[in-house]
Image 1: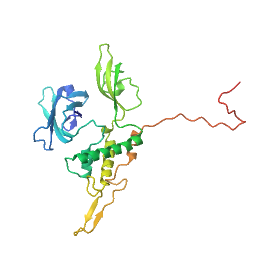
Image 2: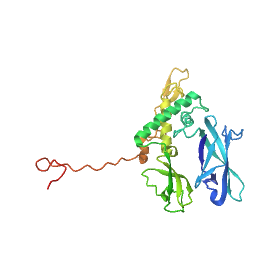
Image 3: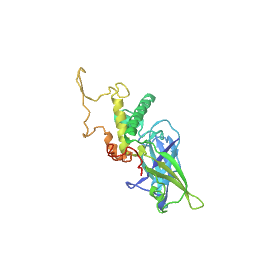
Image 4: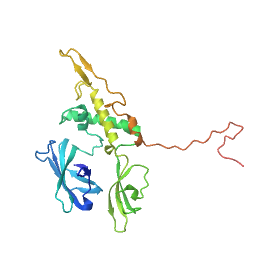
Length: 287
C-alpha cells in the first residue's frame, strides 16, 4: 500500500474545502492520461492531515505511472467537483526522492518500464541520492516521531510547527495531532529534510541519475550519447556536446542545494600560548 498526500485544486488555486463544510471524498486511478478507461484502483475517503492537505491510502497496484482524479465538494452546499491534476508514480514510500518513471522521462524512454529498466534507474537514483546526502551532511528521508503530553504555545494554528514546544534544531513538520483529556496533545511529526518535497533536490537527483544511465552505452538509453546528426549513408555520426554550466538544459550543480546544507559548528579554538618561559605549559594556574 502506498500513501498519497493531495492538495485540492479549485478555480486555479490550491483550496481547502474543510473550513467551508466541504470534504475530499475519493481518488480514482487510471492507466492512461485520458482518464477515460477502466478505474485501476480507488481510495476513499481522504484524511485531512493539515490545512489544505489530504491523505489517501492507495491500494497495492503494479509499479508504474498512473493518472488520477480526486472528487471533492468545495463547501457544504456545493455539487461535487473533480480535480484532474493527479499523476502518480507508484509505489511511493520507498526512500527515493525521484521515480524511475521520472528518469525515463528525462531520457525520452517510453513507458511502461521493464523490470530491468526499473531496477537500473532505481540504482542510479540511490547513487545520486548518496552524493546529495554526503554534500548536505544530512539524510533525505525524514523520521516519524510522536511527542506525547505536550501543551501548545497557542491554539489558533496547531498545524504550524511553531505552535509546539518541540525545540528541534532541524526541519520539522506536523503530520497530525490528538487532544488528550487533560488538555495536552499527542503530536506526530516528521523530523529532518524531506527530500521528496524539495523540488531542487528532486531535480538534481533525477537529472544526474538520467545522465548516469545515458553515459552507459546500451543500458536502457540506446547509444548513451546525444546524437545530433547521421549521414544519409549512415557512415558518419555527429554527437552534440552537453550544455555547459549556466546554459539552458545544463545539469543542475550540487551548489544549487547550498541552502539545505547542515552546518557543523565547532567551538572556537583557544588563542595560542606564548612559548615557554614566557607562559606556563600547564593548563591550571597555581597561586
